[in-house]
Length: 177
Image 1 (cartoon, rainbow, N blue to C red):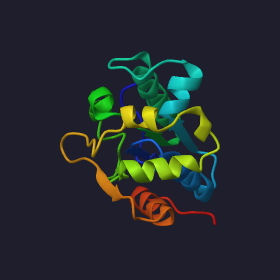
Image 2 (cartoon, rainbow, N blue to C red):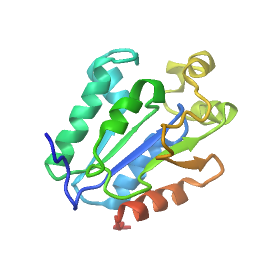
Image 3 (spheres, one colour):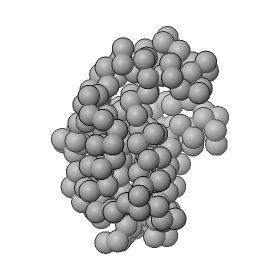
């Protein structure tokens, strides 16, 4: 699948720790985008729901995220990939995506939320009882940036509406309402 994507498709990457706002941001971008040509590829969904596996180095889930992303782009979908996407597990895959897939600078974001704030946000989630502080602490990586300065760091204080507007503007997407 070389030449994945086109001048018309866009790829947005949302990375960050658990409860940093990746999934809710992706969902809101999709809602505002309003068209059917936007695929949201959730790392957790592919890893936990589809494969029922753990996030390990060189895990099969990494290849699946890559494959689904390339497939959607090659079929004319805009794509948001969202997940913790730990740099030590996913950087090789993310950095191997050709620049033709990430068509505009600044479409890769790291949502930087301190651990205590992640815990507070997690407590309000519908699935909060499925895991807690111990698991979240084991997953937490402070400022887990990809090499090469490819990401825009989004601070915890930035309102979600502003994050959504930034991602949409950087991607050249307008919103329906």
